[in-house]
Amino acid sequence: MNALRIGVALSALAFIGPAFAQEDQAPVDLNTYFKLLPEMQQISEKSVESIRTLNRLMKALEQSVKDDEAAGLRAQIRPVLLEHRSLKERMIALVDQILKAPAPARSNLEALRKLHSTTLHDVSWNNIIFKYVVRDLTQALGIPIHLNGRVTIRHQVDVQFPQVTALAALDMICTNFELKWIIYNGEIHIAKKINPNEDRFIEWEKAHGQVDWIGEDEAKTYEDLPVEKAKRLLEKLEGMDLPLLRQRLTKLYVLEGESKRHEVRLAEMKAVEHSMTMFGIE
Image (cartoon, rainbow, N blue to C red; front, side, top):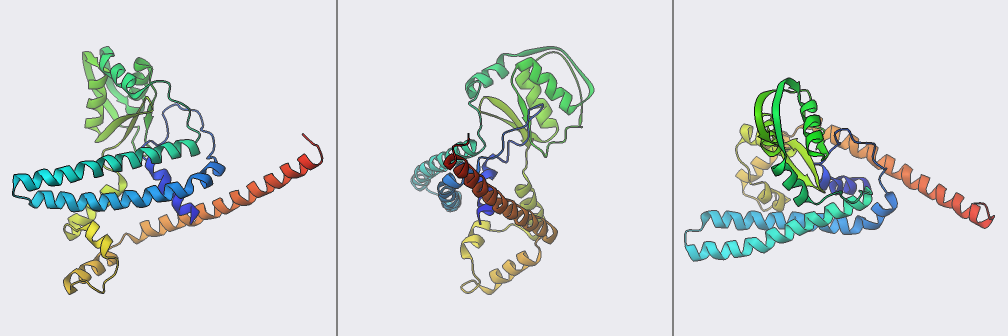
C-alpha cells in the first residue's frame, strides 16, 4: 500500500500546508519517494511504539507517590522523548527531500530574533480581513508567513496600537482565532490550535466518556478482554464516523490509482530515454 504509506509519511508536514502568496511548488520526486519509503515505514512504526511507551510511563508517573519512584520514571521518559523527537526530525528531513524543499534562507533562531526585534508603529487594523493582516506582518518582517489550509483567512481583525512588537501582534491574532504558530526552516507557519484528529477525539470522548486509546490499540482483538471492555470496543466501532471513513477510503483509492499511473508513466519515460540513447538521439 504505497499510497497509504506516503499519506502517513507526508502527515509529518501536514501542519505546514499551503503558503501565503507562495509560488507553485515542484511536484513530488517519486524516484526519491520509493527510495526512501522503507526508512519512512520504519520511522512510522518506531514512532507508534515510542508513543505507547510514553503513554505507559506517563500513567505510571501520575500514579506514583514516592519521590524516588517519580524521579526514576522521569529519567526513563527523557530518552524516549528525545528519541521520538529525533524520529520526527528525520521524517521531516526525508519528506523535504521528496518535496525538493529548498535550503532555508535563514535559521530558525534568526527568524525568532526578527519577531522579537521588529516593532510595528501606528497599527490600525479596523475590521481588516485576516489574510491582509498576515500580509502586513510578512512585509514588516521580511519573512514568509504560511497558512495551513484549515485556517479561516476571512476572519476580521479589529485592533489599534500606537506601538507593538511583531511577536505580540502575532500572538494576539493567533490567540483570538484559536490558532498556533511555529517557526520552521526560517519561516513562520500558522495552523489551527486543535488538529482534525484531536477534534474528533474530543467529540467522541464528550459523547462516550474517556477511552484508553493506547490500551485499546494494543489489545487488537476481543478474545482476552473482559466482557465490559469488549462491549465498549464494539460501541466504539458502532459509533464511528462512517461518512468520514468513506471519504478517507475514497481518497486512498484515488491516491493508489494515481500512484500506479505514475509508476507506469515513469516506466514509459525510462523506456523512451533508453531508446533515444540507443539511437544516439539527444
